[in-house]
Amino acid sequence: MKKSYNIAVLPGDGTGPEVVAEGVKVLKAVAQVEDITLNFTTYDFGGERYLKTGETLPDGAIEELKKYDAIFLGAIGHPDVKPGILEKGILLKLRFELDQYINLRPVKLYPNVETPLKDKGPQDIDYVVVRENTGDVYTGIGGVTMKGTPHEEAMQIMVYNRFQVERCLRYAFEYARKRNKKKTLALVGKTNVLTYVYDLWERAFHEIGQKEYPDIKREYYHVDATCMWMVKNPEWFDVLVTGNMFGDIITDLGAITQGGMGIAAGGNINPEGVSMFEPIGGSAPKYTGKNVINPLAAICAAQMMMAHLGQEKAANRIEKGVVEVLQRDMKSLAAGKMGLTTTQVGDKVAEYAIK
Image: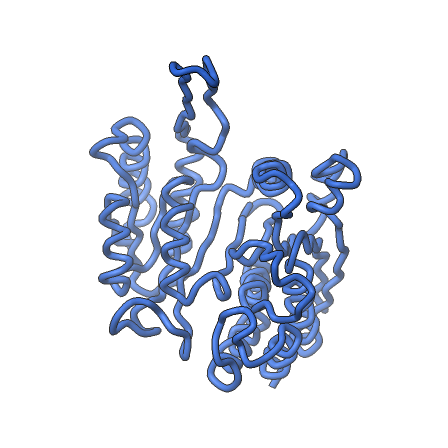
């Protein structure tokens, strides 16, 4: 029976609509050859709508988005909107309200992509970061007193409960088992300083691993040491799991080692609900409308979406298309230096993906 999926498309701001268009182009191409039906519905949530209406997400938007199989996001960020308004009002609200408690970030260096790491190649950089996506200092617990005075005091509190920690850890253990490479899960924390929060993480990590995942090797790394090893010995890693703030930091470090924001993609995952997939780079407004922005990160996000939906053949086709365009056609990942336009990159990936 032919599989059908309903996809909500949020192109967003700046170059978001341009890269999303190429992702949709590739998705349509592989869906046709894999006999899948993809139904796309586009929403205009972003800076332009906010400037016109004063709202980030309209009433009922969350409930409506819950009806979809997945969300494909372009980029959020508008030069005429104060930083934080769109990010909190759209991105963080979607993550929290849709309970997308996993941020999944593959760190994979493809052939013919330059890395700043000396003597490292695709065989060395191929791991995944599982970042808890709903807790930590991002919950907004805290406040400010005596603002604007010499005695101003600001607090933002790191908070986790056992339920949040356990469900993230179980997802990470399952992912390491399914990935089936080194079958190693490493907890990234700071148990020597954050002695309450990461003690909870570490105890749960070993309890769950010992009882439920004896086939998965467990390791622990301090976050500062992890940053060093991501540069020096990325080949050590298989799957890393960590909290929200540390995950936010180390995944950007991972992104630059795999070639930068032009290739890095991520998923905001609710395994029991609707998940959202996006390129990691921002809206890059200075390149808007010039047809020079690199769409590969958005195309890789589309690949992740297909894999999440269980369409592994379609996902593999997209990845094959990305690898071939990198090896055959692209001179650089940088905007305006690719040797191809944005639309030509999408055309080439679609062409190679269906061969």
